[in-house]
Amino acid sequence: MKIRILLVSVALLALCVIPGFAQQKAGSPADSRNPADFIVNHYAARSQFVAGAISRADLDTILQAGINAPSAMNRQPWHFTVVQTQALAKKMVNDIDEGSVLIIISAAKSDNSIVLDCGLATESIYLAAQALGYGSRIYTGPINNINKNLKADLGLPRDYSAVALVRIGKVKAGVDAVSAASKRSKVEDKVNFK
Image (cartoon, rainbow, N blue to C red; front, top):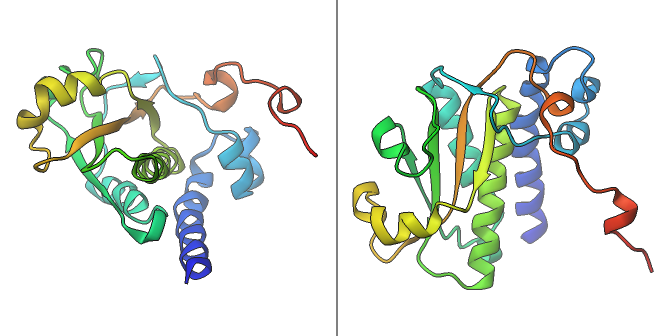
C-alpha cells in the first residue's frame, strides 16, 4: 500500500512538473525536460515578484499538489488557508504584490511526524507553483505572529496552528534558477557516503 501511495504521489508530482517545462526560459538548466533537473534547479523567489494575478485553475492545481503530498500513515493532517486579500496578506508579508497569494499550511498537532507531513505538503505547493511558471517562496518567520495574532482573522480550523506559508506570485521576466537562486552548498560539503 505504501509503495502504491508513493508511486501515485510521484506520478502526480510529475504531472505538475512536466507542464511547467514549457514555461522555462530556453537554455535554462531545466530546459532538458527532465523532471529531476526541474527539482534540482528550483529557486526561492525573493525580490523578483511583480504584480499579476494567478488563475483559479493554476491555484487549484497548486492546492491539489499539496493535497497529494505523502504523509505518515496517510493521515493528511494539513489544512490550507489561501489568503488573497492584500490587506490581510500584508500583516504577514509586508512587501506582497497585488495578485500574489499566501497559502498557510496548518495542522492540529505539532509532533515530528505532522511537522514533516506539513513540510512535504509545503514543498509540493512550492514546486507546483514553479512548475506552472510562478515564483514561490516558503516562509516560517511569520508563523509566530499568525498563531498569536491572526488565527481568527484567517479562519484557521479550531485547534490548528500554522506550520509554514508559501508565497506564490508572478515574477519578473527572465528570472530563473540561474539568475535568482542564492548560493548553495556543494554536495561534497553536505553529504558523506559509508
